[in-house]
Length: 361
Image 1: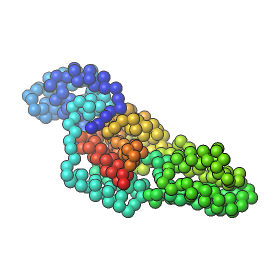
Image 2 (image 1 turned 180 degrees about the horizontal axis):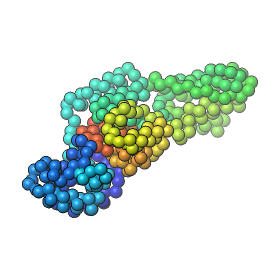
Image 3 (image 1 turned 90 degrees about the vertical axis):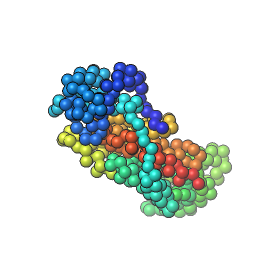
Image 4 (image 1 turned 180 degrees about the vertical axis):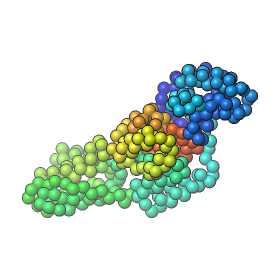
């Protein structure tokens, strides 16, 4: 189900190097970390193992695991924690991903599909990210392309002699307003004509489709519009498009969950840098693009994901599709690297499928 955006050669080498005893000790170290966030030492490990091993034997195996780069010793403790490579190896090679319970499925269906009966797409996505945040105790995140919204109506309203309000209404109920600079002395009739021209062509089209059609009509001389009206239309379309940086909409719910797992001041600084990245939307398009290149759930652990690398977070995301089967966004969670991967992965996958169904009439 999950496809991972990393070179897996490193984990294959590690898997070949681990015998059954080493795998069991490594599994216990990781599972202890995922459960408590704390390092675990050889004495405690020897008690946890299903096989009888002395603490000295466990220490020897831990030394081998450390040389392979799968675990490390934090400076404050004699115990060991998994490295990012170790977590990736565990997720790829050792972890059993469970299926969702019927109760989880019903809960996701009820909250996400329930929002879809009477609300806009944005409201559905917000509800979905809120729901994932609550179920996983992480931050729920949705990245969606504004340009895929299907349009319904447009209107231009003069505010001042050289400024007008452009109002765009989407089929799903979203309304977007932008203030435009307009030529001095522009007659009211030009604003009306610009609105009429767009409304005759707008229904059911995305912004990109509308812009392409209008550019073609103007180029072929089919649009009998005066220059001022053409300028209003061009300015309105450029404003709504917003350029590359604004074509992705970011919805994040449950920020506070990221603060629950802090062990030190440096953790707080890392989470603050994550919040800054979220607010600034740095790297969001890169993350979405990586999700668009493959089916299924994507898992980014720590520095594997440029967007959240400084915060030591993990990101689990899955794409969702429109009625034509095109990927139009991703949905998932951001949390500490000690996420419950086996539980969260199927939740994210199923939520993305529910959202895709809602987008298919």
